Amino acid sequence: MKRTGKNTGKKILVCDLKREHGTIRGEVMRSVKRVLDSGWYILGKELEAFENEFAEYIGSSNAVGVASGTEGLQLALMALAVGRGDEVITAVNTAIPTAMAIVSAGATPKFVDIDEDTFNLDIRELERAITGKTKAIVPVHLYGNPCDIGGVMKIARKHGLAVIEDACQAHGASHNSRKVGSFGDLGAFSFYPTKNLGCYGDGGMVVTNNGKLAAKLRLLRNYGQATRYSCDIEGINSRLDEIQAAILRGKLRRLDRFNKRRSAIARLYGECLKDIGALELPSYDRNSKHVFHLYVIRCEKRDMLRDFLLKNGIETQIHYPVPLHLQGAFKGLGYRAGDFPRAEALSRKILTLPVFPALTDGEVMRICNCVRRFYNGRGRRLS
Ligand SMILES: Cc1ncc(COP(=O)(O)O)c(C=O)c1O
Image (cartoon, rainbow, N blue to C red; front, top):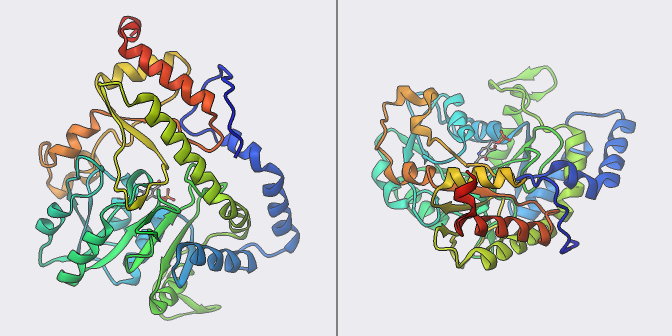
């Protein structure tokens, strides 16, 4: 990956997909042409090859391409026959789709608070949340940072619960050199365009070492059909199409290099921001590899800093501003403000700074200098 010190002065986005596309345009166009010319667009050779390549990359025996990460999670729950009357535990600060997938499978999400240092699910809270109705746990590797998956697996095995890893933000992340997604009974990935491995539309993948679950997933994603016009179980339409699979095959070959560049950007942020007392930088387990899908800091005067950065041409985001128990869609679950104090407090302080492989060192320096100027006084006057 090219590293330059050039500062273009242009607006910096949190994730600049147009610039990313510019770096791989030729290869993407060749992949699309290959599929268009083949005359075969759904469930064909490209998907089969990509499923094999992705399974090998993750270190799982099976991978099943689906239409999105959300449906990957939903189908994983359906494959385990988790549904009506069952509770599924997940982190309260995850992306909305984690919980929507649980609801779509017919089950009830049960939220737990998070560890203040890693922003991932607190496993002490996890054990306390288990009831007689709990059937599964969906731990999330938030921002690309592996959660305490060893701890989650221990608790799950002790209580006879299934584990579906939400690895939608964590392609290539690992714990003790083993890739996330391969620890649980199943693992779900998203290929939403901004992800570390993203396609040009929607897409997803479910991995599993269990051949029976993989076979069931293949039916479930294709109307429940085992052969054409014959079905024994109810399924949905959730397939990763040939064009997306062909593009993703090329991008998978670059994933480690892109992840390395994300880590280098994170290191540079760390070096440049570490002495600013008003900030707390991401922390992670030394036995884990964080792939920095998002670089999320905690900061004082978050909203003022955000305005200041924007006025200086730097976009930031908040992942996520409202924890799930306070979202209108989940009102019926009966949670109230104050139920998850750590996630609630963090949601008021977190800020996502730009990270994408084509971001230059010069741009990272520009962002850091702007943050420094804000805390040195100029920002407060400006906002
Ligand atoms: C943590 C998490 N889970 C699930 C999803 C759902 O993935 P998709 O957008 O592909 O449905 C996403 C992506 O937005 C995510 O970030």
